[in-house]
Image (cartoon, rainbow, N blue to C red; front, side, top):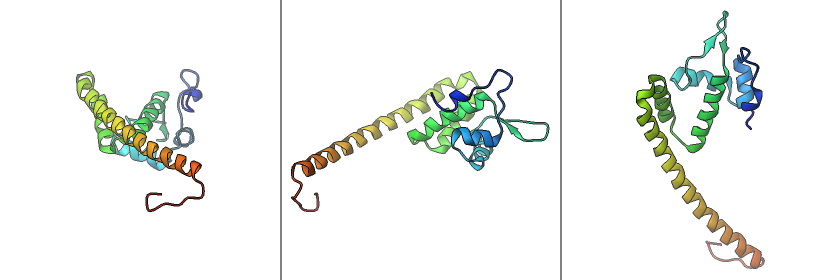
Length: 139
């Protein structure tokens, strides 16, 4: 369970200040404002004094955006995805294609990382079996 999931408040009390959201997500207030400005965040409600009041749905969205960031999806693609979500159900196919493209990229990176891990394992094994040998530039 993520930090965001474990902080659900009782129904009707799911309003969070920007500093609370920053603490829950690890994002800075500056980043949260930037996400809103570039269109990555949906409209965030405001209090009567103009302070942002994030809802649980906003925290859920931020958790999803965090996963997209981990995939390496470019910010422009994330913004495009957010725009498509706001446009409605008729964009489902385009949203799916964006996610499928990102999935293919992730699988490719996983393959590259597995290859790199195999090389590291070989090297570690080499040093484990021959602690006093030094080789050439590939050692």
